[in-house]
Amino acid sequence: MVIIIAAALLFSPHSFLTLRNRDTGELYGRYPMKEGGRFSVEFKHSINLSPVIDVYQIEDGDIYVEETIYYHFGAGVQTELNEGETLTYGEDGSMIVGNIHQLRNNVGYIVGTVYDHLLTVNGREISLRDLCGKNAAVRFNYEWQLF
View (tube, rainbow, N blue to C red):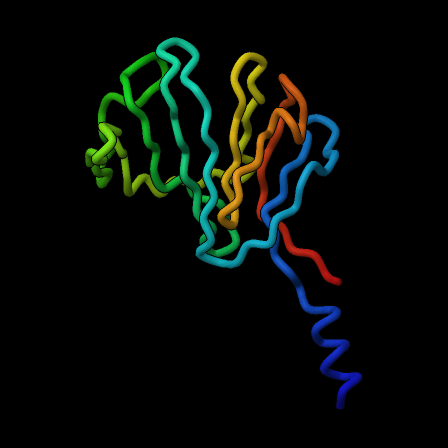
């Protein structure tokens, strides 16, 4: 009985948020993540230099963008709401576009050369410049692995 339980645990799938090089597939990081788990990527807007935070959630084995938080309007920042989306304001002056819920598997970023991109996952903040290097083209996916 112990062998059966150990084998079941050993060969059951474990789910992870993975961070890979977009072009080579090299694995930079693997973070345990369950259904409903959230992570975010923060970077500075290249023109107004204020933070932009994209928040993602795992649902049905896929990655969905759920909200974007920003502090100033600028190039590439959402200026109109799509159907069903909400706009609220944080106590810190942030604008929070919520209820986005758009599928975003293979989420991609190019890590900043001047300013960092910060991944927050499982309560931990990770510098993508330190992990991947400046100007690295990266992608996030939700993957399963047998142990």
